[in-house]
Image 1 (cartoon, rainbow, N blue to C red):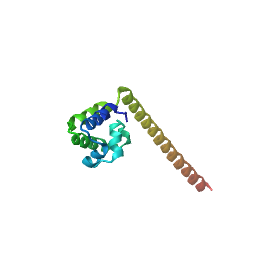
Image 2 (image 1 turned 90 degrees about the horizontal axis):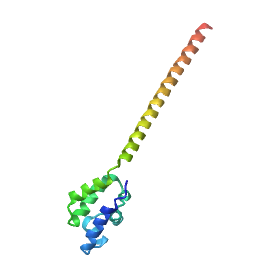
Image 3 (image 1 turned 60 degrees about the vertical axis):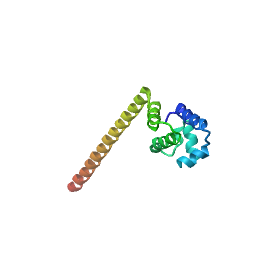
Image 4 (image 1 turned 90 degrees about the vertical axis):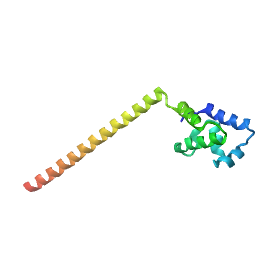
Length: 128
């Protein structure tokens, strides 16, 4: 995940302008200190799971009196993958699909070869 430093700076400055400490925010939000510090540093990948990012961000923004919807939208805009990243993801997905197809063909060939071998063994045993 990208480092979203600008958004973290916004949170940190809003907290500082109100004369609040991280510990004050821990009490207000019930979000762990290290997670709040990570958000203020713009290091959202330090949160326990991507599913927590927006709820934590909204909770923190609301506790600071910020427009939580605007903060969430800004996060979306800043963390959206670039065209290069999207292309890279698409290429990786296509590569994985090709590998999966190749594995399927190999498995099919192995099954056919095994069936042929069993058939040959049965054929040879009937000749004897």
